Image 1: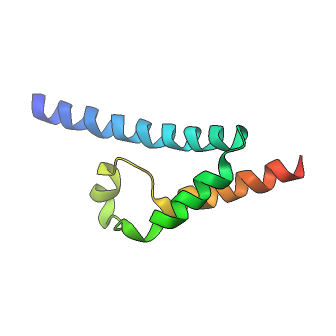
Image 2: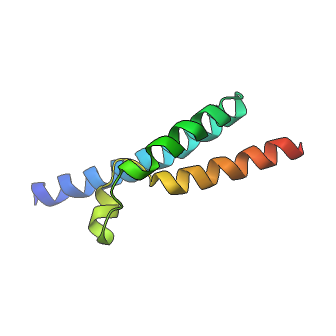
Length: 82
């Protein structure tokens, strides 16, 4: 039972961690560092393997780079409109 609870807690922390990564990206855009972060993520985009299956996505420690790039591009566009 303890192993199961530990596994559930671990997966929960990973979900929270991925959400925090998006918050950190948004904060970088807010501080004016979005273009640099975007450039970095575009350079490393091809180096990560995409997780296969639901368990691989749940166990990932970071959100997919392609999705982070997409979100940063949206945030940069919104910032330019202001």
